[in-house]
Amino acid sequence: MKQIFYKYQGTGNDFVMIDNRQQTFDKTNTKNIAFLCDRRFGIGADGLILLENHESCDFKMVYFNADGNESTMCGNGGRCIVAFANFLEVIKNEATFEAIDGLHKACIDNGIVRLQMQDVHHIENHKTHVFLDTGSPHHVQMEDQLSAFDVKHFGREIRQGAPYNKKGSNVNFVSKISEEKFAVRTYERGVEDETLSCGTGVTAVALAMHFIGETEKNLITLKTEGGELQVSFEISNTDYKNIWLIGPATQVFKGHI
Image (cartoon, rainbow, N blue to C red; front, side, top):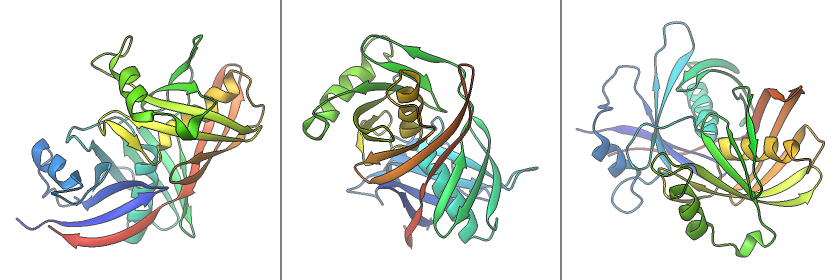
């Protein structure tokens, strides 16, 4: 069977994007999804995303990790599917869509997508790291020599170790550049490697850095290996609300396989 697909990337975090409004794609075939994401034998991507119809929203987002399994929320994927929906003329400049973690609002202007993330009510501050869930679970840890740090080795150790074990966590290593800018490198579960960028990851980093007092800003720039993203938020007591992930989302090519 021939499958038409589109390739999108958001600061180097890349996705196979498929229009599944007619429900023609087999979501149960994990081997096929993993094949499509394979960089040597398939198309190559950090994940696969389906755009589907929704009864009350503009569309539904269904996200799969590169290992073929449906996963938790993907922030850069969420931004890319908004750009894809705009390209398909499902939306104009604003959208409300459903993802696995609930409803999201978004807007797109000149290739820049602003995606509203879920509120965060609980952040754990440990001696060596911070842990929080921004639609996906994230371990956040500061490192001085970030450019030379072995993200894949130490990220895998943390992702598979206690207390995360089988369920696992994404792992972010952070270095402070200034009060309003931080460098981030991320090891993503499901991809099982470092990715060039992670949307829920930079969101987690921005909130974590504010929570532990590394910054007092509520608009933070995150420098990833694939480019820069911004995260804005509001604080109400210990809750973080009105959180927005902001950055580019680009169509790379269209093809069939």
